[in-house]
Every structure is written in structure tokens, then in C-alpha cells.
Image (tube, rainbow, N blue to C red; front, side, top):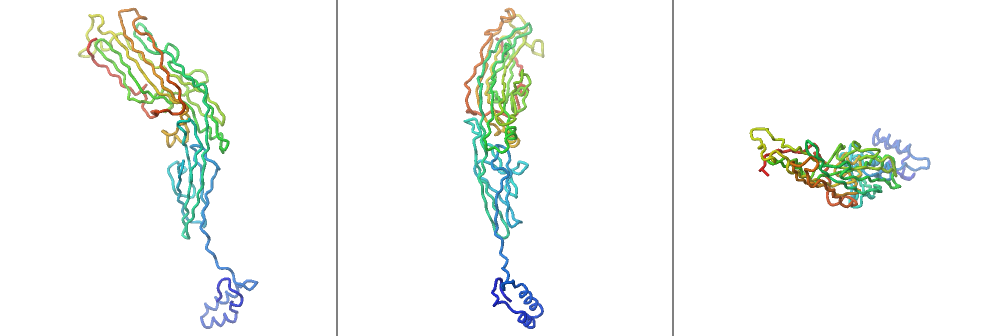
Length: 406
């Protein structure tokens, strides 16, 4: 019987095949006859089957990845029936469609969000993705560099205006707070600028929202009566919020006009005008709230100073960040989902001495003090915001205790 690709001279004739059948049996005859029948028209035998080479190729659904958005990656291995193992180096991570970490399968996703905390932007990043295809006939490898495009942000009108904290007296008591103008306010505008290579510009821009984070770093709130100390304390540092949504300070409630404290970009080149303000306040009644309360109330007059408000201590300090948040990245990495565009510190401080023997309107000294506004810096600065619950307007502790007479 001839080998694959043998010459005509080496091929057995039909007669020889029949003769072989007599010696080797019916099976041998059939094989010899089949070999003769398979001879090609030019007198040669067909080629032997050759094992298919094991190969694999990485295929991208988009040429460039968008920050924070999963880019689908596929691998085509031949022959079929093998397994895929993935690794990544550089800037990025491999995940399932659900967002959980992944390293196997014919389809996988790569995502990357790595802003520059010092410059206040999202620079271009590169990751190298590698796949190993394992098949019973062998293994194959492929690798591909994947770029995540950059995004820049233009910030204008970032001046911060400081107001004052003043003592406002009524027949019932005193309130330390703003005289009608915010203690601190700022009205910046932020423009998003996608890289020209972005393959999905409207959706990419809409994956980013801009707003403010504020953290309380200092707090002193005390009311001192002749024989009582009332104190409001919070755990520091603590996230600050009016109406959120968390972790942002405020969205719209309490602000006038069309300005907002949190906005989502609509497309490349979109500019959002924002507003951020805060006006801490502290109040107390003229008469000790412990008067006549409990088994050991504070002593009543005389002297006239008994049961009277004597001092108010009021200090708050804050750190503020103007940020852009990547919405998709925040679903899996909330603490690392921000581009820090600008930052600044500010504080207010007004301690007053109270003399209730004087007429209402002239009992407190000093009567006012301006806020202290720090310089605005680019990027994140040297500290990080507190973005987890609680927040001080809700999560505070008020203590009312007897105190030595003053």
C-alpha cells in the first residue's frame, strides 16, 4: 500500500491489490483497492492531513477606550475548543461585563480611570493586555496595547467670596450667622474637552458630573450660661452636606436662578455653571434651658447674672474640592472616582461675650467677624475629602451639663 504523496511507480496496481487480498484477507484487499481508487488524475496520491497550527488573535470593539467605561475585548483562538487566560499590565483592570474582576474567557472587558491629582485632568493612559490560548494541540499567545484617551477641563470664574458672621439679637436670644449674604460662595464654570480620538463622545461626556465636596475639619460650638455648658460636637473630619446627593454638598435646593451645585455634562465642549455656598449658624436663648429642670437646677437670681447666657463660642473650618466624577467608575470604585480640579480652605470664627443687662441689640461683643478664605489651588492638594456618612447637620451630639459658675 502506498504512502501519502507517493509516485505512480510506487503505487500498487489493482491486480497487486487483489493478490494482496488473497494473502492478507478481505480487509487488505479492500484497502489496496481503495488506495488505487484514490490515486489522482495525474498519477499521484493525495496529501496527508496536516495538523492545524494553534493561533490566537485579540480583537477590540473600539480602537480606543474611554475613561471609566469598559471596553469589550475578544480573542479568536484556532482550532476551536481551547481556553483563554488574560493578564494586564500598565494602567487598567480586566473585568466581567458585570464589573467584577476577570481573567478568563473568550470575551473580557478592560477599564481604566486614572486622573492626575496634581494637574486636575485625565491624561492618556496605556495598558498592555495579553492572552494565552491553550488547546490540546498546543498554546498560542497574543498581546495588544490599549490606550484610554485623555480628557481636559477648563475652569473659569473660580474666585471665592467671603462674607461675615454676625450676632443677630431678638427678644428670645441671639443667632450667630450670615447677615443675608452667604458666609462663603463661589460661582465657577467648567468645560469638558474630550480627546479627538474618543469613539463615543456624547456618551463619554455624559459619564461625567461636576460638583463640590466639602469636609468639616474643625468645629467649636458652645453656649456658656452662668452654671451650664451646652456643646455641639461631631466626629472630625466629617463629610459636609446640605441636600446631596452624597457625597456631594448640594445639588439645587436653596440656590436661586439656574445655578446648581451638581451637573452632568451633555457632550464634548459642554460648559456647566456651578454655585457653591455655605453659611454656618449657631443660636442660643438668653435664659438657661436648665432653669427649673431636674432635681438640681441651676440657681436662680440673685445675682441677676444667674440663669443668663454669658458666652457663645462658634468656629467652623472646611476644605472644599471642585471635582468631576466618573459615574461608571464610581459604581465600583467610589473613593477613586474623582478628578480634582480645584481646592481651597475656608473658615469662620465668632466668639461673643454676652451682657443681658443691656438692651437687646447691644448685648453681644464683638458683633461680627469676616470669614477667612484660603488661596485656590489646582488639583487635589495635600489632603483627601471625607466622602462616607455621616454628616454634621444630622449626625451630631448635643450635651447639656452643669458647669462651675462664672
